[in-house]
Structure formats: C-alpha cells, structure tokens
Length: 67
Image 1 (cartoon, rainbow, N blue to C red):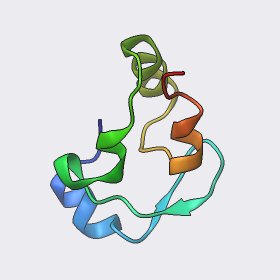
Image 2: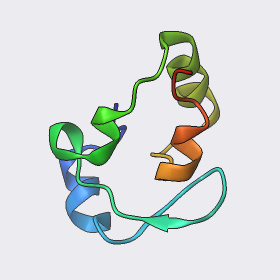
Image 3: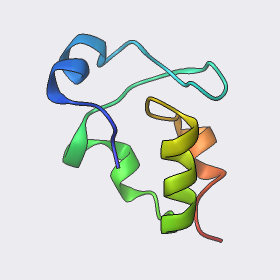
C-alpha cells in the first residue's frame, strides 16, 4: 500500500506531509508501515492512487477504510 520507494522512505521517514490534509506523519515504508494494516477496498485504493502522489496520513486513510 505504501507508495514510497526505499530511497524516499529513508530521506522522508520523519518528514511526511499528507497530500490530502497537510498533516505531518511518519511513514515506515512498505511492509513495516502502519498503513499495511488498513483494510481498503480495491476501488478506493485505485481512487487514492489516482488522486494523490504520496502516502496519506492515518486520519485521511481511515476515511477510505472498509465499513
């Protein structure tokens, strides 16, 4: 789910800024990131990837989680 490559993660690990709301948050990268536990339908995941070029913060990602 994480849209970051390893180089981006190392450079921006503490400096992520949500492209949706502007909040700062921490990205741990691919399989170790908190976002891997988010349960999002494929349709919503495609929408997120189409709308945003980087990872969303926990609060914004929760808006897309399965109900």
